[in-house]
Length: 214
Picture 1: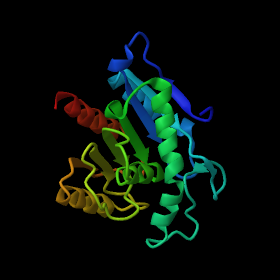
Picture 2 (picture 1 turned 90 degrees about the vertical axis):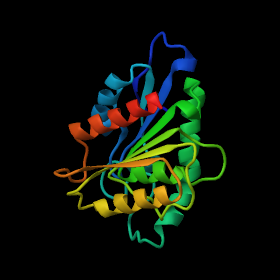
Picture 3 (picture 1 turned 60 degrees about the vertical axis):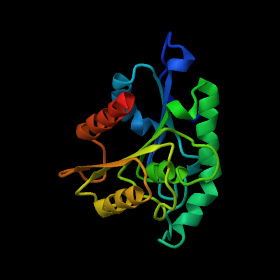
Picture 4 (picture 1 turned 180 degrees about the vertical axis):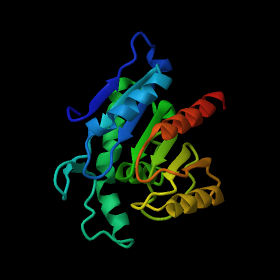
C-alpha cells in the first residue's frame, strides 16, 4: 500500500471510535489528485483515517493510473472489465481496514469517475459488506444495480453539466436503487461538469453528518 496517500491519521483516538475514509480517483489520475478533497473531508471528520488510494494499473492514455481500461469500452464489455479487477479493489479496502483496525461498519468509500464505478459496484458483490457508506461523484454503475446494498447507504453526487458521464446515469441509478429498497440519495449541481468543487464537499459532509444522527 506504499502507493496510497495517507492524508489524515487520527491521533489519540481509540480504534473503536475511528473511521476510515478511502478515496478512489478517476482514470488517468493518481492519489495525489484527490488530496484537496481528502483534506476538506478530514476537516469535517477529525476521528477518521483519510486515505487516497492509487489505482493499480498504468493508464492507457498518457500518465496516471486506472482500475480498468476504457479503450474500446462499451455497455456490453464494461461489466466484465470491472468484475476482473474487483477482487483487487476489495483486497485494497480490506487491507486498509486491517491496517487501521476500522471495521466495515465505520468505513466510507468515496469514488470519483472510474473510482466511483468501482465503489458502486462493490455494493453488488457477494460476501460481507465492505462499507457502511458509498459516495459516488460523477460516476455510474457498470450495469444497473441488481441487489439492494442493505448495509450501505449510497450517496450520488453529480453535475448537471457533466459531458463525460451524463447526469441521467445518476438519476437512473438512484431510481433503481430505491426500487430495490436501498438507502440512497442524489445531489445534483446545476453548474458543475465532470469534477469536484466546494459544493460537492459540503454535500458529502452533510450526508455523512446525517448518517451520524441516524
